[in-house]
Image 1 (cartoon, rainbow, N blue to C red):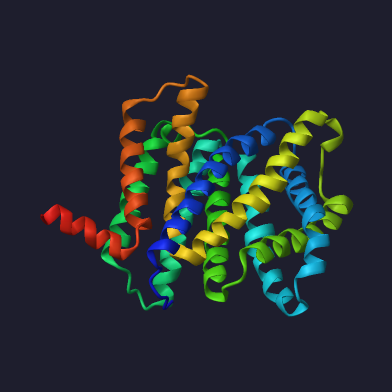
Image 2 (tube, one colour):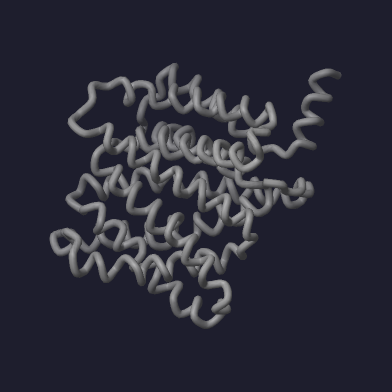
Length: 306
């Protein structure tokens, strides 16, 4: 995939948008896992995500988006909306959020770089490969205790679902970059077409347990999944992809488990072990190395030689 290098202003805006996504997704893993363990079915959480976001987006989409853009938005909805959402929520029903931190947030840059390698004839810059190796190592260190814990039943199914969800999101990011779809229109289209495709199937055939949930739990899932995760975080990620590139934006997502661990330490008084601290440092170095534009990396190398 042949792309031009971003300007300094675009790179700054793109990295800030990616950092915002890191904060949004740090809460996403926790909220999703809470829903999956609170007797919501994965289909319930997906219905709240698509129902709330679709109700907000559909009137705006019909009013402002030309019909010529609809086919591409349908494809984006299939991978970045339905594919990602259903797979990741199903994964939370089998595996803990720590596994999602490793396999989703580590899987997205992995799949993105693999797909880019295939499309470019396996011409991937050395700093990108080093950044991916560092980020993966850091993620494994952060999730070390959870990953080595005795497997409970079907956790491996959740891990495979997380990897499949990461593949869907990687394809979504690369398509956004290739097609140069406006982020705000893309989010409206994904929400609208996902809701139209999913909700009838959910209401008619899929198992649900919404009637047994409290209004507070429904509001939490609907608000976070439907507004923050589906519209706000998705829009910021799409913007970051177009400003700095798919591999650079995806690499920043490796910071999500690190930010989640630090937040749990500061807010919930959860302990940070030595392995986790080392993992946070390593994944941060890898994410920043992979996200910085080549010009900035060249300046850093110049400072190191000086």
